Image (cartoon, rainbow, N blue to C red; front, side):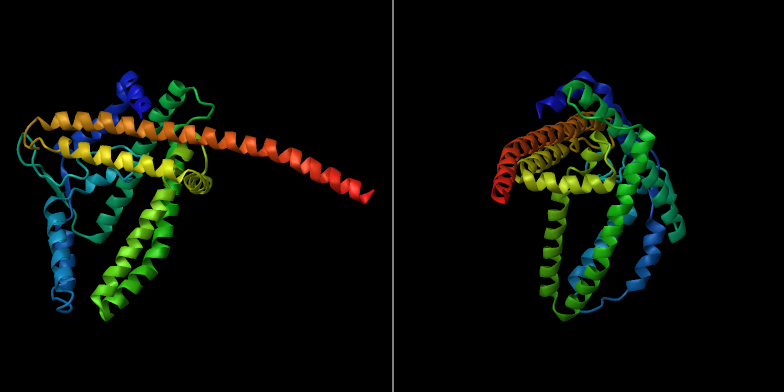
Amino acid sequence: MSTGFEIVAHHPQLALLPALLDLYLWLGPRLSLAPLIAATRQLWAEVPSPEMAPIYQTFNQLLDELATKYNLFALLKPAPFLGVPALMAERLTLARPFGPRPELPVSDPGTALAWICVLVGVGLGLNALYLWQVGRRVVSETETAVPGPVGPVKLWGNLLRLTVLLLAIFFILAIPGSIALLILGAIAATIAALFLMLALSLVFFVIFHLVYTVPGIVQLRQPPLQALRDSIILARVDPLGTTSLVLALLVISQGLNFIWTLPDPATWATVVGIAGHAIVSTALTATVLVFYQERLVQLQTLQRAYTALSEPAQDAAQAAHSHADT
């Protein structure tokens, strides 16, 4: 992990893009879904059943929070993992040091969908530029025999294809899962809650096996499907190392995020949190790429050793077979 921090120490400009994105999300206008959410809530104005009342109330509270504080510009960070880190994308706040933020209301579904598509596309472009910069520095600093990232435009295309692929898989699984959840909820809320917990466990299991997908696309120039396949293989070959990496990233990032969000967003002290978050998160991104390269080298070494051991055995078997034929 120290290698990632050393890379950022040698190239502090790598943290500039995350810092600029956070400054925009903090000081810039807010793209509000309040009118659209208010219109949507009219569709379920009545509680469906007494058993579903707590879930109904919690869901309405969540909608109220999103309507009053959520900023749709947060989709400029479309990826929750290995993209441009943005502290303010997850922080629902309206405050800034020089007065209230201007709001851009979104009132109809068509406009909202158009904004979502544009922001996700631009966000993936920012991710491509960011990962291209970090990936190049990781290759040059570690001197590992990997091709390194392609240009930002081609990398953006690969990330876009990966996003479409993952969304397709998600909807294929989510639609029947949602139908099953509704049916179970109508039968018994306890069974529905158990089913939901099992579904979330499956989601975390899948995410665990896809943790190396983006590093494969960036550092090895792999297409999305090949990167997905190799990520599953690498996670299965080294489950302990992968688990340690994921846990370390979660503990460090979430623990420090608590510190970075301590300053009042209505004061300029938030700049300190944004700067610290940008530096540490970029170091963690570099750490993931370094870790991936190291595990890839180890896997290739094991494959060569296995080939070297299996070839004499195959030659001996062929010789014995030839001797038996004669």
